Amino acid sequence: MPFFDDALNRDLFKLLVDKLAIGLLLVLAGFIVNRAIERFKAVEALKNELSKQRFAAKLARMERQLSEFYWPIYLRLQMDNTVWRRLLDKNREDDDPLKILGNQIETDFLLPNHREIVKIVESKIQLAEADGPLQALLLEYINHVAVYNAAVAAGFKDLHNTQRELLTPWPSDLFGSIEARTLELQRQFEAALREAGLTPRSSGAPTAGHQGPA
Image (cartoon, rainbow, N blue to C red; front, side, top):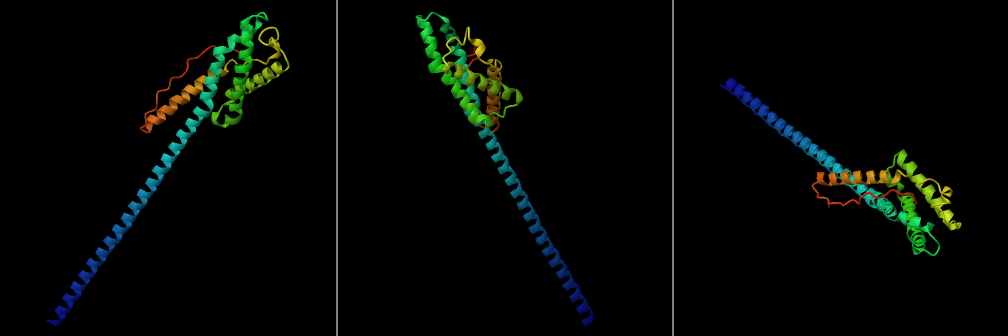
């Protein structure tokens, strides 16, 4: 019968249309979900890349702090600690070979070593990230070296004995402070390398010597 055929056709058409609409909605929803997943993955990849770059920058910064500031100063101060007592030989008689040797050590080693440390401090201080106490110690050291160099240039020969009052005080806490910061930063650097899956080379830190003024 035509009426029932038309009704049946309309129902079938509506059913097909509904299914087609549902199918399109599912396709659209899948597309939206996939785009969202891709966007999420892209954001996470960017975050991971930025995190890697920040970590690499941190490692590079620590490496520069150690190689360009702390280790060079620490080792040069350690060298001072090793030889400074030889300066006391300058108090001997003029014809004593040890007095001559002490004068030569002061001229050829100690004063140039001091100047190198000052040069490192002046050119690399931004790497130190020094707090107030360390800054004060470094300034005391620079002041001591400036006065020491000037006194030697002026011809004073007994700066470690009768003319000692001409020198500004030696910053006695400087070596210990530099040593502590150097070894702690080295420990942090090696820990960061291990965190990154890298194996740091073992570092043999020099042993602490006598902290003598010069």
